[in-house]
Image 1: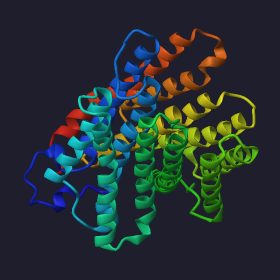
Image 2: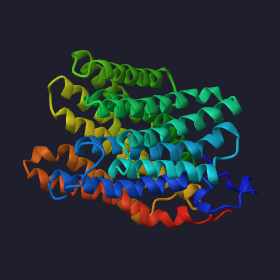
Image 3: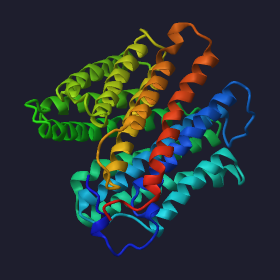
Image 4: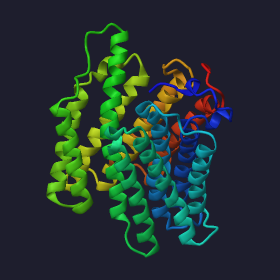
Length: 394
């Protein structure tokens, strides 16, 4: 992705609303830094915060349908101008979209209005994002990007279903799986594009002979296994077929990762973290599969390998790289950026594998949450000034 801010000199508004990654990356980071510790306090019985929904449903909804869509939106609104050769969504349109996202977070946490109104405001954000994505695809006739529009639309549909089932008193496990399934597909599609591209650029500039493997039938098969696994998971989450499909998908995507020569990128953590994040993704698929088969970790811990590990590492990898490149700064991870990566991975490892140590649950969850959310707060502290100010190359 390249920064097109200078290509649109007519924009005279605040720098913060000049590009989608600015408000949504900063908003997602601040929200993750606050929402996860709050959940731990509620879980420990220290905070009696009253949410729109039961505490567990609030936590799941806000991480899956609040935090994640903010990062996805920031990425898409930044990438779409490069995909479509159209001007970026900015100014009042971007500001209103940001306010709609923030309103959803506030109304789900502090229900000032009726549950139906709060749910409609929250659901409106992803509907608006899907509409914008489809608008840009249609106006530019970039139909090769239609899968992104489909996945965001399905994510919006899963959010609506979550609200409908919660308000009617039904279980929300299916829309939760639907949302995570869409994110898994987004990650395997976007990761499969970004990681070999950025790795190839780094290795070429370093004069290395190694190059990531080009997209081949193996990549297509790896993506297909993820697709089959998540579809089976949505319909039959506890079946042996689902377990085996996830386990096979995990092994296949680990092989895919090996073909990208990630271990050669250790001198540049900005690229290495992408490989680490995709490694978490492949691992999460495998351990989710074997947990469904009744082996190894509990399914809850296996799911957190994806949400805390893969999503945590990949979102911060994309957020740091895009924030540096699109504000005119060198794409290089300094010491504080490396610390961000360390914190998110330590937090994920403790959350997933900590229960195996036998240490007190509240202690483990507290340290894991502090480390994981601390990574996002540190991102906000380090990168916030970059996102609020004008790019250096404007």
